[in-house]
Length: 346
Image 1 (cartoon, rainbow, N blue to C red):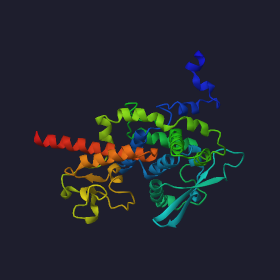
Image 2: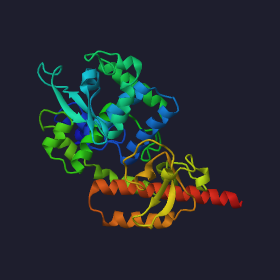
Image 3: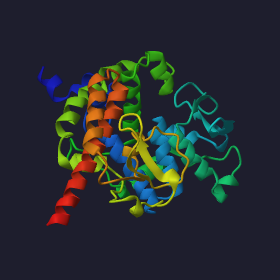
Image 4: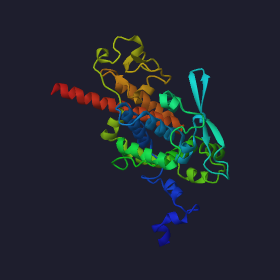
């Protein structure tokens, strides 16, 4: 018994201890919490905007975040594995993901997967780079060695600022943590063992038992307990608070104004700070966007009540997680607004 308590990973069926960190929800090597994953995404995007990481680095890291593939799979991807087609919303990107395991088949077997919209936009920008555009179809998409891919990822996250509420410090980032997060979230949202195995490019469902044992709901009490702290709320809101529309980045542009018609009878909430084409659900999706510019005098308390009512009535885990993020963002806006008002009166 003492041996099990001291070194429980030795009793894991795979014998290497990796899935033990997943099942145990290890805070440094297991799946990320929603707060940690958001911090990583925001940190990577912010680093790119501030020229702290390059476009190729940005594209490579987002390929890892969005697909959960192994570094060796990224290394095996070729230019021809990014398939562009025309769709109703513009160019769609499909990825041919090389399988990492299998007898003498790893170099030719691919499972196709549609790239999430964020990754698709980044890859399109990457493919437009002159040196990338000139590459042959069988040339590596990024690097052709998994050790080089892992080195780039490590280098990026030495420059990207992240924060974990449960660790009270930077988020320890390892490639497999994105994989663990993708698998556990898929199962939490109702994916079958076969669907989860396909998503993770497993040929069998044997390993899915470990993902199913590490349901992300186990982390929710931790997230909710610390989610009420002011430091966390301040991080949830990433935009720029403005006193009036005259201070907006796109002042004078009718298309920049963001209103809420669903619950607040068209009242103004803020402005959009970018002209990029967006198909997200405004104004709720705007709350988590770094380009959102909320108005100080908007009825944020009323909007917060609406979100809280929705959270209480919602039973689907995926929607609850999204709504909770929106609540955190609105509370962050209120905190920043109150601090600015207090400063003005001082």
